[in-house]
Amino acid sequence: NGPKRTFALRDADSCVLAGGVQVRLREKGVAHLSYWVFPQFRGRGFATRGLRLVSAWALTDLGVERLELYIEPANEASRAVARAAGFVERGVLRQHERIGETLRDMILCSRGLDPPR
Image (cartoon, rainbow, N blue to C red; front, side, top):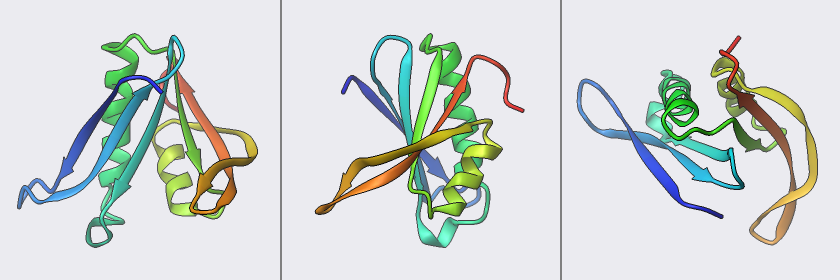
C-alpha cells in the first residue's frame, strides 16, 4: 500500500464533518478510493459529490490512469454512489477482503481517464 490522502466532506451550512473520501496510490498509475458518510448525512449527495471531485483530482493532478473501488455486493447505496460518479462494475472478487474474521466478496468498480457517463 502506497501513500494516501484523505479529504473531509463537510456540510456547507454548518461546517460539520459529514464523511470523507480517501485516495491510496497502489501500483503505478492505479489508485484505490474509499468513502464514508456518517448516518445523519446519508442520502444527501455527500458521497457522490465527494467521490466525483476527488476522482477528478486524482485523474488530473496525481497522474493516475485508473481508479478502483471495492464494494460489498449487498451495499446497494454504495454501488449507486459509484455508478453516479462514473465508475463501472467490473466483476466480483471472491473472498477478497477480510472484515473481522471473515473473508468477504467484493465488487471491483473502476474508472479511467474517459469522462464519466
